[in-house]
Image (cartoon, rainbow, N blue to C red):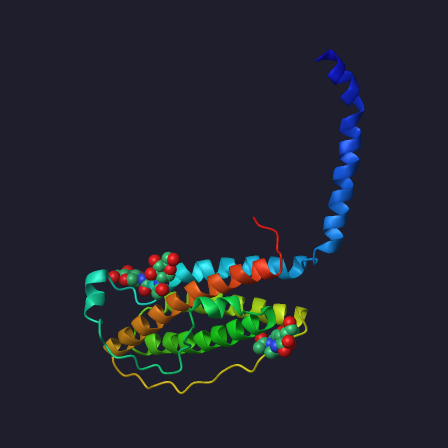
Length: 205
Ligand SMILES: *[C@@H]1O[C@H](CO)[C@@H](O)[C@H](O)[C@H]1NC(C)=O
Ligand SMILES: *[C@@H]1O[C@H](CO)[C@@H](O)[C@H](O)[C@H]1NC(C)=O
Ligand SMILES: *[C@@H]1O[C@H](CO)[C@@H](O)[C@H](O)[C@H]1NC(C)=O
Ligand SMILES: *[C@@H]1O[C@H](CO)[C@@H](O)[C@H](O)[C@H]1NC(C)=O
């Protein structure tokens, strides 16, 4: 036992050197992650998490009240529809996903800003729509900046023809519809962004 400790006395130093060498070879063979892009992904996920919570407040209805809106036909054809299949997630590229996220975010901004005006026109509180809108704007700015960072063209923002609303009931129906779509969008975006973090080899936190 005593002999062992003498023999291995110099090994810790050698071990350090070997570990250091390993570290350098690993670092150079692995594709470097972009710290800026990784930071942006983190900020985007933060915005999406906030929007997930806020999306439920968009209509400000209780579960009992919501039952009255079940089965009401959807009327906002311009709201984005996301693909949720596993095959879809596996084929995602960073540039295409960011472009898609940007277009969807802009589309929701358009709808939520319209909803805010519609709520005001029938004297409903527009606070929740205002909050959602401001987080969508921050998300859209982050997406814009990340597209510029990877030298990808920023896609054109979508337009939509939105209906004229005259009653508070109408506005509530649209609030429910946008709220539900926004929740699906948040789930989808979160999965896409986590996938992009992995693709870009961003450090985990
Ligand atoms: C996205 O990047 C890939 C290469 O990683 C390229 O082949 C493809 O054309 C790009 N797509 C767009 C829409 O720019
Ligand atoms: C939600 O409704 C309550 C009354 O039912 C009201 O006091 C509150 O201000 C509303 N909140 C929002 C964000 O609209
Ligand atoms: C994207 O960012 C650039 C540079 O900051 C800015 O000029 C442009 O207006 C932005 N585009 C959108 C759609 O926000
Ligand atoms: C979003 O995801 C949460 C948990 O992952 C789930 O409970 C919720 O039903 C999902 N919402 C939609 C609209 O897909």
